[in-house]
Length: 566
Image (cartoon, rainbow, N blue to C red; front, side, top):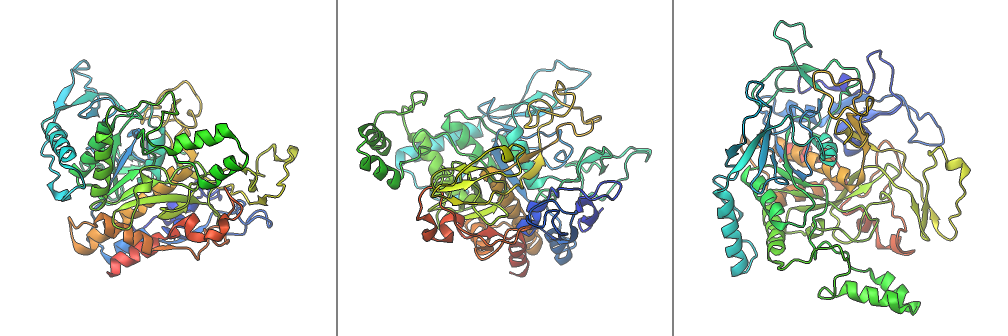
């Protein structure tokens, strides 16, 4: 199977040729990564109801390969998250060997398989940041004191020593979120090593599936493994594992490491625990409601929230002794984004405000704030929106019950037994489609593994049918992962067009993504055009489509066509 022959594997049919009732790659159709013709829905009243598996008629991968058949160089996406399962059959060959863990070691930790001959070998030192140099970033908007602090930190990292540990995989406990995001970006048909005597699965072309050291691979014969595809299965993902500690230096190191490795895209599918910048300010309309009700307690709460120097509201939050490191991180993210696009989730609060650091997005930087849209053409029920949103990508939905709208999941088994009255609110259709992606196998995954549940990590050699390898996923985390995959496609196409080592700067990459997004469009496999909904105020739809969708729904085909013809 070559780079240009994915039609059968993506058709969504099982070994007997029977169509699946749910096409798990619908989001690739919605993004324009693949072209597909869908059959009629099983329910004539619902265009999103399950239908026969679609007929795949083309992919953007084919277009890149056809335009530049001899130019194959993968892009690298740095994922700053909680880690990624490197044992997952659909990810095993796509994870960059430079992946690092900054959650358990200040200067980074990597893992390698234990040596059976010497199972108690101690950790080995490794200089992950050796040669770190940020001069290529140009001037960073910092005061003299903060600039000196950053310079000292860079020098400390450059001289530091991390460790290499003998573990099967250090990310197999808490990496469910990162594993799900990784699958959407670079997931590929599950591979296994072909046997030397030829009795194993047939070898396939290294251009499509191969390990970093050139190991020839074949399709995994396990029937429980999906022929899964991310947005760009020909690129690679560098996992930078971080925790949720309010430790700014950990995240400074993460962004510096991504810069140091020269990645093409940075993906941050979550917020950052900045004690100040991550706070959500009160919305004016809610503050007005509090005043109108003459509720002194509520008015006092809004006043304290609005006062950045007021008392700490959250008794469990850690007030920093100094904001210096968080300020440096903010300026560093913006500076790096001008060189490397930084794709960020807009947040899942259903608020008309963007979370941090997505809200750093501005026309003069490469930060991309990604919201979520459903195949109903509506903002996902949970998706943040409003000023600063860059664009949207397809993902799942959530129910909404408030005085502005009623959005019910009528596919739930208990839906027929419940009664809800929209009152004066608007009834908004719910989307039953979710993203299907890779899951952390075993009890720590979203699905907690399929039987036996007690198995912590099914071994790669005998994963068992299913093995908890897949899960439904979504949120603006899923949407941002899809956008990062499209950014990787753009970087790979640009390299094919202009030669090895060619880069697509962050601002240029962001401009390309924005230019290739559309407001006047429908989200396939649905046919409804993008439309606003009243989420937090009755008059919100009057603010227009950009308020909900930014530049609109991203179209990968337009992105690739623009790069190829430029």
